[in-house]
Image (cartoon, rainbow, N blue to C red; front, side, top):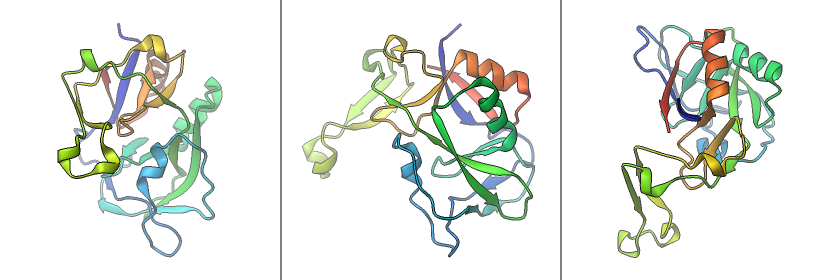
Length: 187
């Protein structure tokens, strides 16, 4: 069995809800990419998550731009396991009692194994975005070099922050807890 898995929101849950990106107390969308940068955040007020498609509440969801939204059950699991590689930011899902949180990953690790991925492409000068030259443009069929991970439980791969990676141990604990909305793909 694999050591690590990419964690996705299970879009095949019948009648599931779909959440929009978080907004602040004034209804202004907050930068969704900040939750993948690997740094602790100071958010001055509770964030709100509008619902774009009402339905069944889930313990784990991703917004359209990949913001991780979790129920308190997952927070409690992380606390019991002593996992400190994440920050939980209080959030209110509109029309639901919760409690819900945005999961901010605090670890970013250089671990993508380019040779084992299905496809890897980098930004080139001719792509017209000079600030991105040399960075990952496409990573399909993600594979990581687990020898570079150092036993981390949850992290994002450096250069590809859309991926959220969990250890086999954490995957098994989340499954045993019966958390809804999870889908795992071996990396």
